[in-house]
Amino acid sequence: MSERPFQERMNLKVLLGLCLVHFIGDFYSSFINPLLPEFVAKFSLSLTEVGLITGINRLLAFIVQPCIGYLSDHYRTRLFLFGGPVLTIVFVSLTGVVPNFPVLMACVALGSIGSAMYHPASAGMISSFAGSRFGLSMSFYNMGGTLAFGLGPLFITLLVSGLGLPATAFAMALGFGVMIYPFWVLPRPEGESLRHLGFFGSMREVLGDVWKPILLIWIIGLVRGFVSQAFGTFVPVLCSQEGYSLSSIGLMASLFNIAGALSGLIAGDLSDRIGPKPVFYASSVLSTLFLLLFLYLPGGWIHVGAFFSGFFVMAVLPLTVTMGQELAPKGRSMISSLMMGVSFGAGGLLTPLVGHFADLFSIRTVLFGLALFPVLMVPLIYVLPKKRGPA
Image (cartoon, rainbow, N blue to C red; front, side):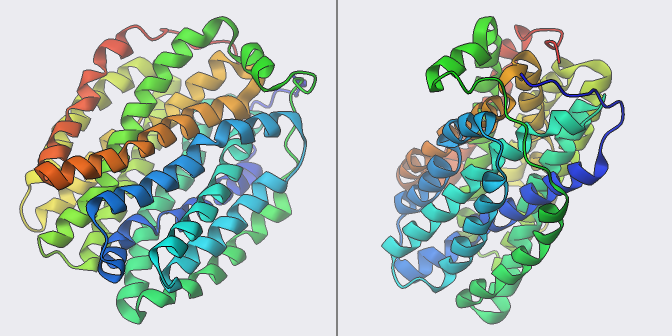
């Protein structure tokens, strides 16, 4: 690994640039789920096809991230930092003007590939500029993405409600404006000392003797990502069926994700102070409780349920990345891609299956079962390492 001078204080200028890269890419990625009812109406989609949209999105946005992470750890280039958001901004914005379902899938696929490009590169740079507050810095970075998934649905549903579905094309101007600051301040990523190794050799070098705790953390992240994605995908469809307006659905999605952004910051700070395991325990129990309440709260109370369920179910997602990077510091971009990419992607691949069961048994019944998953992770949390690995 290349040597970096230790910085006691966070470099807020660079961290803000990385946060904005994460924010703007995920802001556009967040348009897909709240617009699913519009796509269903326009193309007469089944719930299985709805799950297929989300599955392709998660497959290409997350599953391919280890390959990007491998390249990011080997080569010093800003291509991934800036090329990825450009793809996402352009092709997600075009989803509202496509003429048919296959072209919609192509735009979702290209936008998702863009998302896969910037996540490992940007997350892998955090530790170099975090100083002594790695957990808080990673949570700040993660807040950019989570906040984007909170504000993006509200923005796009208001735009489409006012101007119609084709108005999504106008949205890309905002993204290019926001990208000016990161382009100005972000340095090239620092490559790791893995260039002489191939992909699998790099994996062996990065994981080494810590592969077992890395696997446990990955499973916990997978379950959390899967549950949050399933609720994010199918609650808008369920609420649409029950008569909620598009703007109300967008507000629910925003509250769910904004709450996750806030809780990620709190969880990161608490993790720096008391360690990650107590945070994991509390979040697991409270996630199941509030996800169940979310499904059954009536009327306007559903927005309260959306906030608190998002707050707890997404609280520990940035901690899976920090724990992974601290246990295996030689390949930070690759570890970030495994924790964020493969776990979220594998969860996304299961969403078509969730859609299939929802077609058979109803959306509410399937989501009730999924709400129990976080509390079932408590035995895995118990065997996680008590102390973080060397930074």
